[in-house]
Image (cartoon, rainbow, N blue to C red; front, side, top):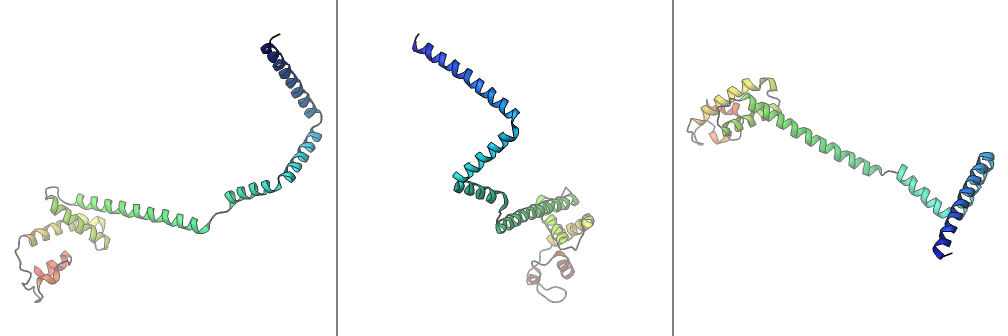
Length: 182
């Protein structure tokens, strides 16, 4: 018999023996379930006693992961999420208002005029002087004011009705300009 044949024979015997041992263990487990449970409990106790430090460290690590959270970190995380949501909301609101302002304006206006008047409408809505429903009506008035002011060549030193120089009104809203210049 060659070495390969001997190895193959031993492998088959070992496999058959392993199958017999496994079947015997299964029969014993079925016949004595309480005894098997008690033996397993004792094995666990012996293992825990031998590896007490390791078991404590493992338990502590799993408890840390499962139950312990840093409240400061959780608050910061929540605040960051809320800030991002608020920014997204404000940006969406701004885009919506700008789109509504552009929709309220005539399409025939030049782009730079439409943008200026749309920005003025959005500012009026944000200042709560105009509601979104009033935008189209106010847009017509702003277009008229824009062209009325744009067609005049005025000196900044020229006075208004009450005698104040015109440069005092630079940056004032369109209503104040129309009241004093008109």
